[in-house]
Amino acid sequence: MSKCSDTAGNAHSWGNVCSPPPTSSLMKTFSLLETAAEQMMVHTDFQAAFGTCNKGLEGLASMELEDNRCLEYKAGFCTVGIQALAELNQWRAALPWVLQQYEDQEKIPAQIVQLCILLYSKVGEPAVMQETARVWLHCPSNRSVSGFRTVAELYLLHVLVPLKYREEAEELILGEIGTSVFTEHQRQTALEFLEEKEQQNQELPLNSSQNSTADVISARGSVLCKLEAMLKFLYRKLLLTHSGSFRFQSIFFAAMLLYLLFLRLDPALPSSFMWIFKLFQLLKQMWRTMFAPYYQAITQSKGL
Image (cartoon, rainbow, N blue to C red; front, side, top):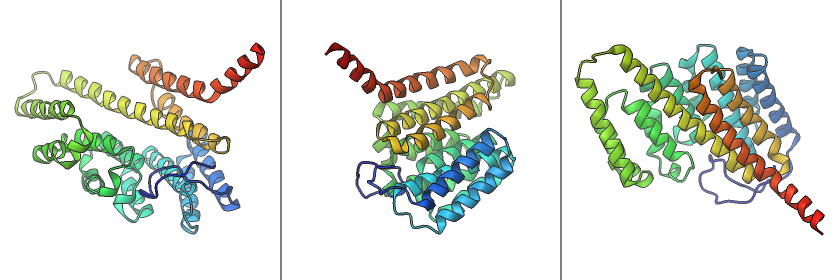
């Protein structure tokens, strides 16, 4: 897939780099990625999907990462592999496995860090991601990555707040990271949220069932924001994509989102309506971006 050239910094971000036609090794790697996604989403054979991810990553390790396609495939294998481990109830192995693929914590793609934070938050083990996320956020080269702000938000809401690390949370909001990614209003709102959570922790809950319901609603809202961010990322990637890469960028990521939405949630539940609406909106935007030029050309030719 050919892409426009971009700055050389942040080699782990999915930037735009002019690349030669894919080699046979890259085509084989892409075929393995498709197979892994099919095994997980269609056949629900999670063990086989994880094995295919490992095979693909081993192949990439023996190749020279000469362009961003290798980095995209590596992140794709890790995305499928993390989901497969979660389905196998082997979520404890997810982070160690990711760290095995990326020698330095700072080099993990933002999307993978976000996925791991959400996974360990969901299973009630946010402390597992504290060190990795903290090191990643404090790496200067990650500041320009598109998902940096989302990682900071998830780290605050799903790691520091549940662990009741008030001082570190305030440092994140008011320090160099917070001032660079959050507006003044957002920082003030975050501080008020911390104050409110501290008061709630000091008070005995009067109705545990009501508190549990509120927590579920809050968690769904956070994941909804994450889904919307992922869809917007897919939309931006399609804007930069040529026909050679359209199949990978659209089908793989859209299939992953549809799998999470319709197979891991019940679309009939009212709580799923907003997810479906957000997905519909973003897909409409992508459809117009891809096919509007063709309709305009047809209209102009008819007018001549």
